[in-house]
Length: 155
Length: 155
DNA sequence: GCAAACTGATTAACATGTTAAATGATCGGG
DNA sequence: CCCGATCATTTAACATGTTAATCAGTTTGC
Image (cartoon, rainbow over all chains, first blue to last red; front, side):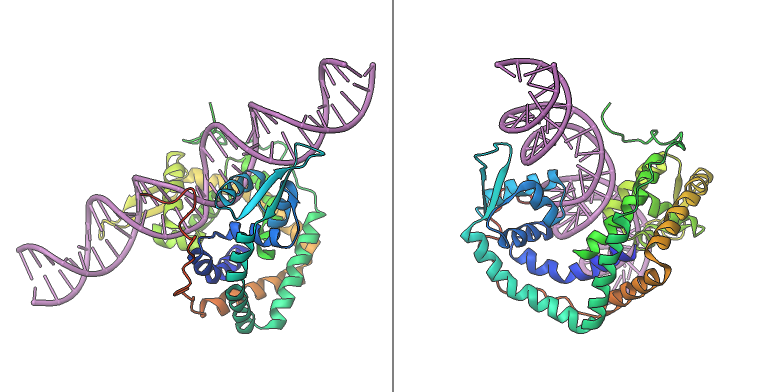
Protein backbone atom coordinates (compact mmCIF):
# COMPACT_ATOMS: atom_id res chain seq x y z
CA UNK A 1 0.00 0.00 0.00
CA UNK A 2 2.84 2.37 0.83
CA UNK A 3 4.47 1.44 -2.46
CA UNK A 4 1.27 2.32 -4.25
CA UNK A 5 0.99 5.66 -2.45
CA UNK A 6 4.65 6.40 -3.04
CA UNK A 7 4.36 5.81 -6.74
CA UNK A 8 1.27 7.96 -6.99
CA UNK A 9 2.96 10.76 -5.04
CA UNK A 10 5.78 10.79 -7.59
CA UNK A 11 3.74 10.40 -10.75
CA UNK A 12 1.34 13.13 -9.70
CA UNK A 13 4.09 15.59 -10.59
CA UNK A 14 4.92 14.10 -13.97
CA UNK A 15 1.45 13.48 -15.31
CA UNK A 16 0.54 17.11 -16.13
CA UNK A 17 3.69 17.49 -18.22
CA UNK A 18 3.13 14.26 -20.11
CA UNK A 19 -0.54 14.98 -20.70
CA UNK A 20 0.32 18.40 -22.10
CA UNK A 21 2.24 16.52 -24.78
CA UNK A 22 -0.46 13.92 -25.36
CA UNK A 23 1.38 11.10 -23.62
CA UNK A 24 0.42 8.65 -20.90
CA UNK A 25 2.93 7.28 -18.42
CA UNK A 26 3.04 4.03 -20.33
CA UNK A 27 3.59 5.70 -23.69
CA UNK A 28 6.40 7.74 -22.16
CA UNK A 29 8.06 4.62 -20.75
CA UNK A 30 7.88 3.00 -24.18
CA UNK A 31 9.40 5.97 -26.01
CA UNK A 32 12.12 6.29 -23.39
CA UNK A 33 12.99 2.61 -23.73
CA UNK A 34 13.04 2.92 -27.52
CA UNK A 35 15.27 5.97 -27.43
CA UNK A 36 17.94 3.93 -25.66
CA UNK A 37 18.28 1.32 -28.39
CA UNK A 38 18.46 1.06 -32.14
CA UNK A 39 15.55 -1.35 -32.45
CA UNK A 40 14.08 -3.95 -30.14
CA UNK A 41 11.70 -6.93 -30.10
CA UNK A 42 8.23 -6.49 -28.65
CA UNK A 43 8.81 -9.00 -25.86
CA UNK A 44 12.00 -7.30 -24.77
CA UNK A 45 10.32 -3.90 -24.94
CA UNK A 46 7.55 -5.23 -22.71
CA UNK A 47 10.17 -6.18 -20.15
CA UNK A 48 12.00 -2.85 -20.37
CA UNK A 49 8.85 -0.75 -20.10
CA UNK A 50 7.32 -3.11 -17.52
CA UNK A 51 4.13 -3.67 -19.48
CA UNK A 52 2.21 -6.82 -20.30
CA UNK A 53 1.98 -7.95 -23.91
CA UNK A 54 -1.64 -7.01 -24.56
CA UNK A 55 -1.26 -3.48 -23.16
CA UNK A 56 1.89 -2.99 -25.15
CA UNK A 57 0.28 -4.30 -28.33
CA UNK A 58 -2.52 -1.74 -28.09
CA UNK A 59 -0.22 1.15 -27.29
CA UNK A 60 2.18 0.26 -30.09
CA UNK A 61 -0.72 0.34 -32.53
CA UNK A 62 -1.60 3.85 -31.34
CA UNK A 63 1.95 5.22 -31.28
CA UNK A 64 2.63 3.74 -34.70
CA UNK A 65 -0.43 5.50 -36.13
CA UNK A 66 0.93 8.72 -34.63
CA UNK A 67 4.25 8.07 -36.39
CA UNK A 68 6.19 8.17 -33.15
CA UNK A 69 7.56 4.69 -33.75
CA UNK A 70 7.84 2.19 -36.58
CA UNK A 71 7.58 -1.59 -36.81
CA UNK A 72 8.91 -4.12 -39.26
CA UNK A 73 8.97 -7.88 -39.02
CA UNK A 74 12.40 -9.43 -38.66
CA UNK A 75 13.31 -11.24 -41.85
CA UNK A 76 15.08 -14.17 -40.15
CA UNK A 77 12.07 -14.93 -37.93
CA UNK A 78 8.79 -13.55 -39.16
CA UNK A 79 7.10 -13.98 -35.79
CA UNK A 80 9.26 -11.26 -34.34
CA UNK A 81 8.53 -7.64 -34.96
CA UNK A 82 11.26 -5.06 -34.48
CA UNK A 83 10.22 -1.72 -33.06
CA UNK A 84 12.17 1.50 -33.42
CA UNK A 85 11.59 5.13 -32.60
CA UNK A 86 11.10 7.62 -35.44
CA UNK A 87 12.71 11.07 -35.78
CA UNK A 88 9.34 12.51 -34.74
CA UNK A 89 9.41 10.37 -31.62
CA UNK A 90 12.96 11.42 -30.84
CA UNK A 91 12.00 15.04 -31.26
CA UNK A 92 9.16 14.61 -28.79
CA UNK A 93 11.53 13.07 -26.27
CA UNK A 94 13.95 15.95 -26.69
CA UNK A 95 11.09 18.37 -26.13
CA UNK A 96 9.71 16.73 -23.01
CA UNK A 97 12.97 15.44 -21.55
CA UNK A 98 14.33 18.64 -20.00
CA UNK A 99 11.10 19.43 -18.14
CA UNK A 100 10.91 15.85 -16.97
CA UNK A 101 14.43 16.02 -15.64
CA UNK A 102 13.69 19.33 -13.95
CA UNK A 103 10.77 17.76 -12.12
CA UNK A 104 12.90 14.80 -11.11
CA UNK A 105 15.58 17.16 -9.83
CA UNK A 106 13.05 19.09 -7.80
CA UNK A 107 11.76 15.87 -6.26
CA UNK A 108 15.31 14.81 -5.43
CA UNK A 109 15.98 18.24 -3.90
CA UNK A 110 12.87 18.14 -1.70
CA UNK A 111 13.28 14.55 -0.63
CA UNK A 112 17.02 14.59 -0.35
CA UNK A 113 19.47 12.88 -2.63
CA UNK A 114 20.75 10.58 0.08
CA UNK A 115 17.31 9.34 0.99
CA UNK A 116 16.44 8.90 -2.65
CA UNK A 117 19.51 6.76 -3.16
CA UNK A 118 18.71 4.65 -0.10
CA UNK A 119 15.14 4.20 -1.26
CA UNK A 120 16.29 3.01 -4.66
CA UNK A 121 18.72 0.55 -3.07
CA UNK A 122 16.03 -0.83 -0.78
CA UNK A 123 13.61 -1.24 -3.67
CA UNK A 124 16.14 -3.08 -5.76
CA UNK A 125 16.93 -5.33 -2.80
CA UNK A 126 13.21 -5.99 -2.31
CA UNK A 127 12.86 -7.00 -5.92
CA UNK A 128 15.84 -9.33 -5.62
CA UNK A 129 14.64 -10.91 -2.38
CA UNK A 130 11.17 -11.62 -3.65
CA UNK A 131 12.11 -12.78 -7.12
CA UNK A 132 13.93 -15.67 -5.45
CA UNK A 133 10.88 -16.48 -3.34
CA UNK A 134 8.51 -19.09 -4.79
CA UNK A 135 4.83 -18.20 -5.07
CA UNK A 136 2.45 -20.37 -3.07
CA UNK A 137 -0.27 -21.69 -5.33
CA UNK A 138 -3.06 -21.78 -2.77
CA UNK A 139 -3.72 -25.50 -3.18
CA UNK A 140 -6.96 -26.35 -1.42
CA UNK A 141 -9.02 -23.65 0.30
CA UNK A 142 -11.32 -23.04 -2.63
CA UNK A 143 -13.83 -20.55 -1.29
CA UNK A 144 -17.39 -21.64 -2.05
CA UNK A 145 -18.13 -18.04 -2.93
CA UNK A 146 -15.18 -17.72 -5.29
CA UNK A 147 -17.38 -17.94 -8.35
CA UNK A 148 -20.68 -16.47 -7.24
CA UNK A 149 -19.91 -12.89 -8.23
CA UNK A 150 -22.40 -10.89 -10.23
CA UNK A 151 -20.02 -10.41 -13.11
CA UNK A 152 -17.79 -13.28 -14.00
CA UNK A 153 -15.74 -14.23 -16.97
CA UNK A 154 -17.24 -15.77 -20.08
CA UNK A 155 -20.04 -18.36 -19.80
CA UNK B 1 9.63 2.60 -12.08
CA UNK B 2 11.32 0.92 -9.13
CA UNK B 3 8.24 1.64 -7.06
CA UNK B 4 6.12 -0.07 -9.67
CA UNK B 5 8.41 -3.09 -9.79
CA UNK B 6 8.60 -3.26 -6.02
CA UNK B 7 4.86 -3.28 -5.64
CA UNK B 8 4.48 -5.96 -8.29
CA UNK B 9 7.15 -8.09 -6.61
CA UNK B 10 5.15 -7.98 -3.39
CA UNK B 11 1.68 -8.44 -4.81
CA UNK B 12 2.78 -11.37 -6.94
CA UNK B 13 2.82 -13.41 -3.74
CA UNK B 14 -0.58 -12.31 -2.49
CA UNK B 15 -2.58 -12.52 -5.69
CA UNK B 16 -2.88 -16.34 -5.89
CA UNK B 17 -4.31 -16.46 -2.37
CA UNK B 18 -6.82 -13.70 -3.03
CA UNK B 19 -7.88 -15.15 -6.37
CA UNK B 20 -8.47 -18.53 -4.76
CA UNK B 21 -11.09 -16.76 -2.66
CA UNK B 22 -12.57 -14.79 -5.54
CA UNK B 23 -11.09 -11.45 -4.50
CA UNK B 24 -9.06 -8.84 -6.34
CA UNK B 25 -6.47 -6.68 -4.58
CA UNK B 26 -8.88 -3.79 -4.57
CA UNK B 27 -11.73 -5.80 -3.13
CA UNK B 28 -9.42 -7.08 -0.42
CA UNK B 29 -8.34 -3.53 0.47
CA UNK B 30 -11.98 -2.50 0.73
CA UNK B 31 -12.96 -5.39 2.98
CA UNK B 32 -9.92 -4.82 5.17
CA UNK B 33 -10.76 -1.15 5.54
CA UNK B 34 -14.37 -1.99 6.37
CA UNK B 35 -13.39 -4.56 8.96
CA UNK B 36 -11.57 -1.85 10.91
CA UNK B 37 -14.63 0.37 11.37
CA UNK B 38 -18.28 0.09 12.25
CA UNK B 39 -19.48 1.88 9.13
CA UNK B 40 -17.96 4.49 6.86
CA UNK B 41 -18.87 6.96 4.11
CA UNK B 42 -17.96 6.15 0.53
CA UNK B 43 -15.59 9.09 0.18
CA UNK B 44 -13.70 8.17 3.33
CA UNK B 45 -13.54 4.55 2.22
CA UNK B 46 -12.09 5.65 -1.11
CA UNK B 47 -9.34 7.44 0.81
CA UNK B 48 -8.64 4.49 3.12
CA UNK B 49 -8.54 1.92 0.32
CA UNK B 50 -6.70 4.33 -2.03
CA UNK B 51 -9.25 4.04 -4.83
CA UNK B 52 -10.93 6.65 -6.99
CA UNK B 53 -14.66 7.15 -6.67
CA UNK B 54 -15.73 5.50 -9.93
CA UNK B 55 -13.68 2.35 -9.32
CA UNK B 56 -15.00 2.14 -5.79
CA UNK B 57 -18.56 2.65 -6.94
CA UNK B 58 -18.36 -0.30 -9.31
CA UNK B 59 -16.68 -2.59 -6.82
CA UNK B 60 -19.17 -1.71 -4.07
CA UNK B 61 -21.99 -2.68 -6.39
CA UNK B 62 -20.37 -6.07 -6.97
CA UNK B 63 -19.47 -6.76 -3.33
CA UNK B 64 -22.93 -5.71 -2.21
CA UNK B 65 -24.52 -8.19 -4.64
CA UNK B 66 -22.27 -10.86 -3.14
CA UNK B 67 -23.55 -9.89 0.32
CA UNK B 68 -20.04 -9.17 1.58
CA UNK B 69 -21.01 -5.62 2.51
CA UNK B 70 -24.15 -3.56 2.97
CA UNK B 71 -25.09 0.05 2.20
CA UNK B 72 -27.71 2.37 3.59
CA UNK B 73 -28.17 6.08 3.06
CA UNK B 74 -27.48 8.23 6.09
CA UNK B 75 -30.72 9.72 7.40
CA UNK B 76 -29.27 13.12 8.30
CA UNK B 77 -27.80 13.66 4.81
CA UNK B 78 -29.33 11.53 2.11
CA UNK B 79 -26.47 12.16 -0.27
CA UNK B 80 -24.17 10.12 1.92
CA UNK B 81 -24.23 6.36 1.85
CA UNK B 82 -22.85 4.41 4.80
CA UNK B 83 -21.03 1.20 4.01
CA UNK B 84 -20.49 -1.65 6.45
CA UNK B 85 -19.14 -5.17 6.27
CA UNK B 86 -21.53 -8.11 6.71
CA UNK B 87 -20.98 -11.24 8.84
CA UNK B 88 -20.28 -13.08 5.60
CA UNK B 89 -17.62 -10.49 4.74
CA UNK B 90 -16.09 -10.78 8.18
CA UNK B 91 -16.00 -14.56 7.88
CA UNK B 92 -14.16 -14.27 4.57
CA UNK B 93 -11.60 -11.97 6.14
CA UNK B 94 -11.07 -14.40 8.99
CA UNK B 95 -10.59 -17.19 6.47
CA UNK B 96 -8.08 -15.37 4.29
CA UNK B 97 -6.36 -13.30 6.99
CA UNK B 98 -4.05 -15.96 8.47
CA UNK B 99 -2.66 -17.03 5.09
CA UNK B 100 -2.19 -13.40 4.16
CA UNK B 101 -0.26 -12.73 7.35
CA UNK B 102 1.83 -15.84 6.78
CA UNK B 103 2.84 -14.56 3.36
CA UNK B 104 3.65 -11.15 4.79
CA UNK B 105 5.76 -12.78 7.50
CA UNK B 106 7.66 -14.81 4.92
CA UNK B 107 8.35 -11.68 2.91
CA UNK B 108 9.57 -9.89 6.03
CA UNK B 109 11.77 -12.86 6.89
CA UNK B 110 13.36 -13.00 3.44
CA UNK B 111 13.83 -9.28 3.08
CA UNK B 112 14.74 -8.62 6.69
CA UNK B 113 12.63 -6.84 9.26
CA UNK B 114 15.06 -3.96 9.61
CA UNK B 115 15.16 -3.23 5.89
CA UNK B 116 11.40 -3.52 5.70
CA UNK B 117 11.02 -0.94 8.46
CA UNK B 118 13.49 1.40 6.78
CA UNK B 119 11.69 1.04 3.47
CA UNK B 120 8.37 1.91 5.08
CA UNK B 121 9.89 4.94 6.77
CA UNK B 122 11.40 6.15 3.51
CA UNK B 123 8.13 5.69 1.65
CA UNK B 124 6.19 7.64 4.26
CA UNK B 125 8.80 10.39 4.10
CA UNK B 126 8.54 10.44 0.31
CA UNK B 127 4.79 10.83 0.51
CA UNK B 128 5.17 13.68 3.00
CA UNK B 129 7.84 15.48 0.98
CA UNK B 130 5.89 15.34 -2.24
CA UNK B 131 2.48 16.14 -0.84
CA UNK B 132 3.89 19.51 0.18
CA UNK B 133 5.28 20.07 -3.31
CA UNK B 134 3.02 21.97 -5.70
CA UNK B 135 2.29 20.42 -9.08
CA UNK B 136 3.44 22.38 -12.11
CA UNK B 137 0.56 22.84 -14.49
CA UNK B 138 2.56 22.79 -17.70
CA UNK B 139 1.38 26.23 -18.83
CA UNK B 140 2.40 26.75 -22.46
CA UNK B 141 4.25 24.05 -24.42
CA UNK B 142 1.12 22.58 -25.98
CA UNK B 143 2.43 19.92 -28.31
CA UNK B 144 0.90 20.26 -31.76
CA UNK B 145 0.51 16.49 -31.77
CA UNK B 146 -1.16 16.37 -28.39
CA UNK B 147 -4.59 15.76 -29.90
CA UNK B 148 -3.85 13.89 -33.09
CA UNK B 149 -4.11 10.43 -31.58
CA UNK B 150 -6.09 7.74 -33.32
CA UNK B 151 -8.47 7.28 -30.43
CA UNK B 152 -9.50 10.35 -28.53
CA UNK B 153 -12.16 11.13 -26.04
CA UNK B 154 -15.78 11.91 -26.95
CA UNK B 155 -16.61 14.10 -29.95
C1' DG C 1 -38.46 30.95 0.63
C1' DC C 2 -35.96 30.11 -3.39
C1' DA C 3 -32.68 30.02 -7.05
C1' DA C 4 -27.86 29.39 -7.48
C1' DA C 5 -23.84 27.25 -5.86
C1' DC C 6 -22.00 23.37 -3.81
C1' DT C 7 -21.36 18.43 -2.29
C1' DG C 8 -21.45 13.20 -2.42
C1' DA C 9 -22.16 9.59 -5.28
C1' DT C 10 -22.83 7.48 -9.59
C1' DT C 11 -22.62 7.05 -14.62
C1' DA C 12 -20.22 7.67 -19.11
C1' DA C 13 -16.40 7.02 -22.05
C1' DC C 14 -12.04 5.71 -22.97
C1' DA C 15 -7.14 3.77 -21.57
C1' DT C 16 -4.76 0.30 -19.36
C1' DG C 17 -4.23 -4.14 -16.49
C1' DT C 18 -4.93 -9.00 -16.65
C1' DT C 19 -5.92 -13.72 -18.03
C1' DA C 20 -7.16 -16.82 -21.66
C1' DA C 21 -7.49 -17.97 -26.34
C1' DA C 22 -6.35 -17.44 -31.18
C1' DT C 23 -3.15 -16.77 -34.92
C1' DG C 24 0.79 -17.40 -37.49
C1' DA C 25 5.66 -18.83 -37.67
C1' DT C 26 9.40 -21.89 -36.37
C1' DC C 27 11.42 -26.00 -34.54
C1' DG C 28 12.17 -30.84 -33.62
C1' DG C 29 11.32 -35.78 -33.54
C1' DG C 30 9.37 -39.42 -36.19
C1' DC D 1 9.18 -34.16 -45.10
C1' DC D 2 5.46 -33.33 -41.80
C1' DC D 3 2.97 -33.07 -37.84
C1' DG D 4 2.79 -31.82 -33.25
C1' DA D 5 4.98 -28.79 -29.88
C1' DT D 6 6.59 -24.39 -28.94
C1' DC D 7 7.16 -19.47 -29.49
C1' DA D 8 5.97 -14.32 -30.53
C1' DT D 9 2.39 -11.51 -31.02
C1' DT D 10 -2.22 -10.18 -31.23
C1' DT D 11 -7.16 -10.43 -30.12
C1' DA D 12 -10.96 -11.17 -26.82
C1' DA D 13 -13.29 -10.27 -22.64
C1' DC D 14 -13.69 -8.38 -18.43
C1' DA D 15 -11.82 -5.45 -14.23
C1' DT D 16 -9.86 -1.33 -12.89
C1' DG D 17 -7.80 3.54 -13.56
C1' DT D 18 -8.95 8.11 -14.91
C1' DT D 19 -11.32 12.35 -16.24
C1' DA D 20 -15.57 14.57 -17.21
C1' DA D 21 -20.43 14.85 -16.78
C1' DT D 22 -24.72 13.93 -14.46
C1' DC D 23 -27.90 13.66 -10.70
C1' DA D 24 -29.96 14.19 -6.41
C1' DG D 25 -29.64 16.34 -2.04
C1' DT D 26 -27.99 20.24 0.74
C1' DT D 27 -26.40 24.81 1.79
C1' DT D 28 -26.01 29.72 1.04
C1' DG D 29 -27.09 34.42 -0.39
C1' DC D 30 -30.44 37.43 -1.28
